[in-house]
Length: 449
Image 1: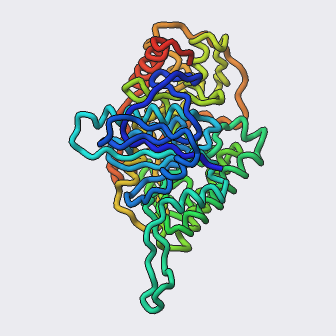
Image 2 (image 1 turned 90 degrees about the horizontal axis):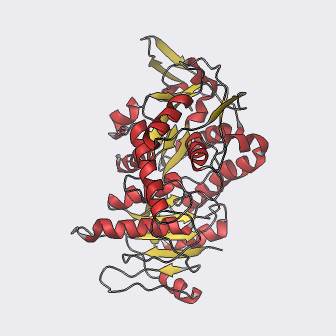
Image 3 (image 1 turned 180 degrees about the vertical axis):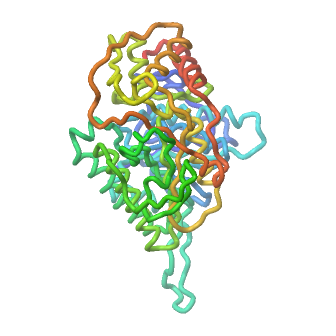
């Protein structure tokens, strides 16, 4: 079963049990918000009304974002809307809240209030992307007139859709959990992608931006050099390396350290094979590193249902007193201070990378880009940056290394800059400042993060 929400224009808010710093609202299972030409908001409380709303003819073009209520997905939906795209979100809300979508809708309303540009439409379907019947029903709503065979009138040659591109975020992503529950990760991340792509192809939707990960580089990351896309390739490739030497890398990957990374590698391989088998497919995989930060407004941040296990959310839980101390997993890596080094990228830069991938001239085939800042920061450096911005001490303790971790992982993102016109603009301190703003607004609103 899937539930539907349509944000047309008018802001809506009410009390909610959900923790977030801005407009909170507890909603019925299905809702619709009026267009800009109306004076009020209409909330469809009955399923029949929602069914009517969802079955209205759709003749505009949309970008479909799967997992669009999550941390990275929500920031990407926001940036897409600011860029003028109509956006359809599919999310089962297993690790996100409906209020995130409503907050984005309110932000879009405010953004376009004083502008003369047409305000884009945002639509939410609450569904699991692995539910074939639910996804089929949703895609049917956005079907466009098909192309008919010239020789045999009445015979459909190609199905078409008003969805012109898809951004895929729907994956489990906790490294430690993937080690404990590998089948969960293979079933969702790999199996889910296969069935989802089959459905997209059936509806003539063949342009995808796929959320991949720097984990596909495995132990190559420990070489201590910026990672370039060629180090993990779906085909044999030759290039000049950082030392100016001619280098050839065979198709494959090296030293994957956890099931999560393997699922991302498998997904890339599947998408590469798909694009190779059918030239109508245009697929871009974005390998990103460690997203942190929040939208500069302080209205949109990281607010998952489940406890995130990556560094920054854990640091913040320690600061807030939810956790007593921050565990630092290992201080014997081959890094300047012995703690693990990661390439931290502001989530807004990351979201804009997805917009850049969509705006780039579509070409058939499979392309891969790193999205990172190109600069590494150690765990201790991140802790120091947080302490400096928040003006509070973060208690820490050293413990043994964590299974599945590598010592260093830093991007070389020049390919994205050259081909997509994208580069990271925001640094670690800006990330911390934006998080501080988000949490400050949450505190003023009387919420607990």
